[in-house]
Image 1 (tube, rainbow, N blue to C red):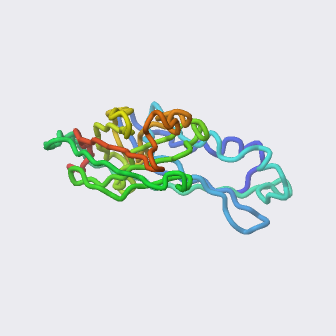
Image 2 (cartoon, helix red, strand yellow):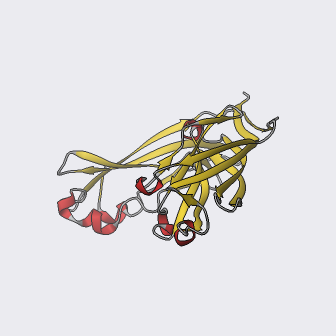
Length: 246
């Protein structure tokens, strides 16, 4: 269909009228704008939404900026016209149930890594994979920091290798402690957390684990002969999933 720019402002609102009270439709929608110069489409997909009498419209508030859309050379608005479309998938109703299970773990997993030639590491370092309660994990370390801590602190995270394959509702809760060993005085710097890992949160840890000035202070004992010793303690407590029970 062809619409002028004033109608296009509201394109991202998809409305389903005349729904009866108590009835609902679950749908996934995708909006398109045709690029008339390059013969392709700009598309954006919304999440699955529930349309019902009290909420009969959903959309994307920020589909495309006005400046980008109105610039003729971009191809979306040419000769005072644009071509738009929508693709809708109706999701059939089904019964689902949530399952929260306490994992019967044995003693906490504990593993130590001695990272040598520490000064020659790149921007990041990964340990080999290790298994805890049928889940795969990796230690993820940034020698010179990550994000806002770059150049200020060493950053250390635990990464769930399996999380990338979790479904939308699946997650696992873990207790984790990460330590840097003082190789001279016998102590350590230890930080802990207990949180959920999921497909949207595959890694958790500490961007500002320790200031770099403290890490490289020879009297502190964290780096000796260019080697750093890191220890992880990990225990999986819960796992959560949603199952079709229809």
